[in-house]
Image (tube, rainbow, N blue to C red; front, side, top):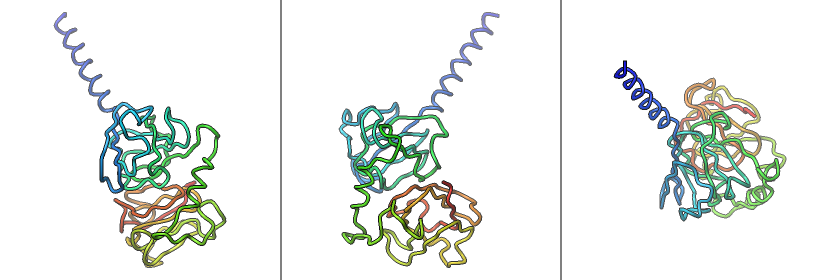
Length: 237
């Protein structure tokens, strides 16, 4: 009886350890885009990346496991977003602006893979004005300003896809969903995109099948693992 009890306790301890390991998250931040430069891996969260010498330095990241919230200020303040497991070769809204990161419960984000998460401003219940102003000042294509009214302004098409990286080549704009890109001869051709309004889901197969990523407003000069793989899209928010 005693031997059976000890065996049961040992098994319970082992299972508990395995469960804890399965729940543990891990994220790696890189100093340059496309996973280049110095890097730091975080497993237990960080209230202040200054402690690891990586404050306001991240330009790309990989979420190895778990769901992570990254924030512009220390102690998870300021402008924050939730990211699920995936590779993020660029961070349009957080480039050189991440000061804290922590693992959160699944379900708080708005997508998976390379999709952007749920954006919020912990301090103001809205979008950070500073971030919006910086976005409007961003220049396109090596210094040429976009003549249209930025991401948040009025725009006839809320999303544009480009044939090549860095917004080069042929472009196709959409106002609503597209169950197939074949009708506009753009199947598996997109390499970069701009979203002016809303949250958009891009999928690798027709009718929103296969791998799908959700993107929020911003510039995406390289689609990473979705490069030349987009076959359908729709607005989800």
